Amino acid sequence: MFGLFFVILFTPGVSEFLCTSPDLEMSYTFCDSTAQAFTFNLTPCSTMNKPNWKAALTWIPRSDITFLKVVFNVWYEGAKALHWKEVVCSGADDKYAECATLKGETLATEFDIKGARITFPKGNYNIILRAFSDDAENNMVICLNFTMIVKQDPY
Image 1 (cartoon, rainbow, N blue to C red):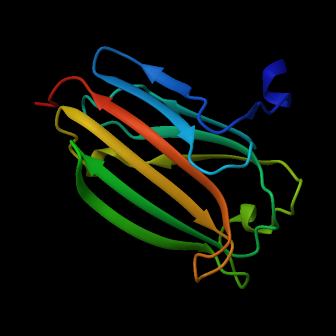
Image 2 (cartoon, rainbow, N blue to C red; image 1 turned 60 degrees about the horizontal axis):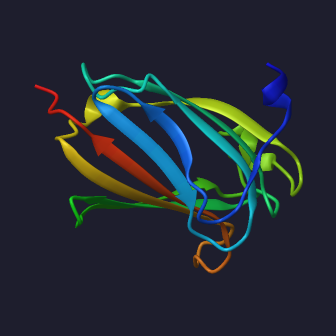
C-alpha cells in the first residue's frame, strides 16, 4: 500500500516488467525522450480462457488533459496487425473524469481491457501506444512500447 503513494520515475529505454506466467510475458519501455512519472499494472497475467484484464494506471501528465487522442499500432511477428485511433478526451462533455487532469496532478485510474474479444496466437507482439494533446498529433504527451510474448496457443 505504501508503494501506491509514490510514482516511480522511469527514464526512456528502461524496461518495466509487467508480468510473467506460463502462457504470457509482458513488459514496456518509453519510446519518447522525456522521463515520465508513470506506472501500469495488469492482472491476471494470462491469455488462457480469454480473460478480461484489470489494468491500473498512475501517471503525472506533462500537460493538461483537456484533449487526448490515443493511437495504437500493433505488430504480430513483425507484421502490422492493427492501427487504431481514438479521441478519449475532447474537452466537451467527456465521459471520463480523468479528462480534467491538470499538468502535475496525479491521474490514478483502473479499467477493464476486454481480452475475451481477441484470440492471441502464440508469438511476439509489439504494441506502440502514443497519446497526443492535439488532434493533429503534433504534441505527444506519452509514448509506450509494450512487448507481449504469448507462449502457448489458447486452444
